[in-house]
Image (tube, rainbow, N blue to C red; front, side, top):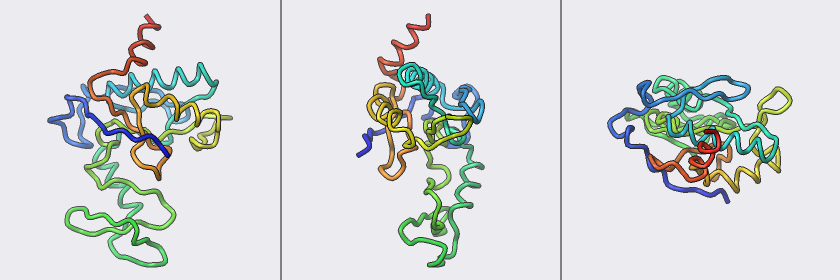
Length: 191
């Protein structure tokens, strides 16, 4: 079972709109294999502490398989690639239906679920779809047992938690404005 904790959003997101965050809220983080990507400024600090500590303790490079922050347009584009308006039992599943703008959508078979546009933790810049950077390629987060076990044991110490049992790659920053002690200690060690 994946450890799941509720999200406390940072206060600066209270008046923001999902997928429409301003530059003062975001920070750039380097993710091996995909380059610099935006993420909430507090999540960026927690991610850097998590990723550097993971590398120091396991030798593995923690990365992301896509953009942590998804604009509203990016959420819409991804949603429309994975969900369709008309149900076809050969290409769609009834197990995952979403209503968006008053219209029912059905998930295509063989693709991962995504949130309804405007509701994603990626739109709050708090979520990361994790991966390992190994042998010049992104690898699934569960592909390395040592790394996976390290992440399960340590993610929460750095303010990260899973959201769904069905998505082991998807973690999100959950500690709001209170940086976890592990992040504070990591940053002190750099000074």
